[in-house]
Length: 483
Image 1 (cartoon, one colour):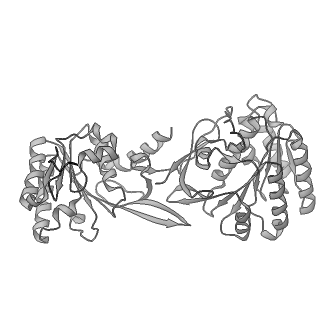
Image 2 (tube, helix red, strand yellow):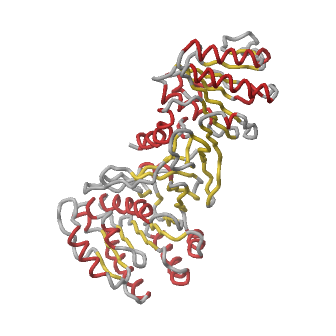
Image 3 (spheres, helix red, strand yellow):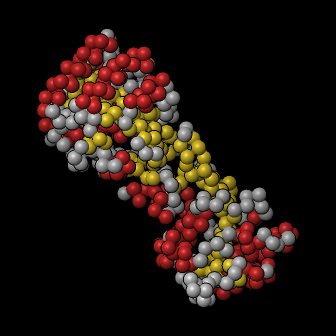
């Protein structure tokens, strides 16, 4: 499902442009940005309409197919040509079988003749010139411009397309001539580094967004699009088995990212940035809650101040049985709408086996902080009678450090001593976040950039993922590494 979503995102960006059969595109960016991978992904998307060629100054076909094995479906020794600054030789010094052309022979005329030959002789040729700078840097500027115009004219006349790859953004003679200019870069936002693709120019199509996050994970150029919410319907949440000494997060991707899940006796800090919808934070935390109660264990949910109770319950109740729900306690914050909210939830929600919620599942906390804390402890003791690892999710987005400072340390001790797992959601860049980060065994940060929800794992190991909601009928998600 995730593979289809990310492929769809790539198609949505480039298909309208490729469908108008453009003549040329410029892909520019620093070394390692993924320019070649993007060019070859574009080639793959149109290989049924064009005869494809790859002309390189950097990478031989043998090396290319080792790095990107999927190119063998499009290219071969006859369609992937390499200009080299010397004759390639094997390990023993013998001349090796190669598809190289000596760069010293690649005068402007020779290069132009090669491209024209492919455009004219092959009909509807799709040619990637990688990298164009190395092929043309010795050519005087006026001759280079004339050469570029000539190639574009021939491509236009023979229904071909040229993709120029450049590592010299300042050499922008092509930018005025081509139909599209794509710039690949890298940006830092909120302590998270991500790859960004900018559409600087794209003739003939409406560009509704000009910046995207992408990844090179798995040797593919993947445009990340996570802005759409998945539609969930009532279905039974299939639990994942927890490894010995760990508690599963309810997500295979997250378990793998953290190494078997979360160790028993751990504090998990989930920092939520200001522009992030709590919907994503709840999915991460409540998937773990669901997995635990579906695995015959207990869980507690502590709603944030004025957090809509119905939104929390909608992500839990329809995806478990009434027996599962008997191992859950939900504590709602004091609110004058509390009774109405609970009545609404009780009327509209039922478990997977169509049973109504037990009225004891939801309890309202008191205005007095000490009384509320005593109520939480009492509920914890009742659930803990079986002695199994419990999951506790607490939304503390609206709490100040002074309200929870001493109780935070006490709670951490209880969690560790009883081999439970506590997930604490806090607002990023606050005193509470700083204090909780010192106690946390697992520290995650949820941010949103360019319409992509990004989950960065700060500790135990630094990793960055795009989080994508799965449409499997129950609250679940996938993590796409941002590499």
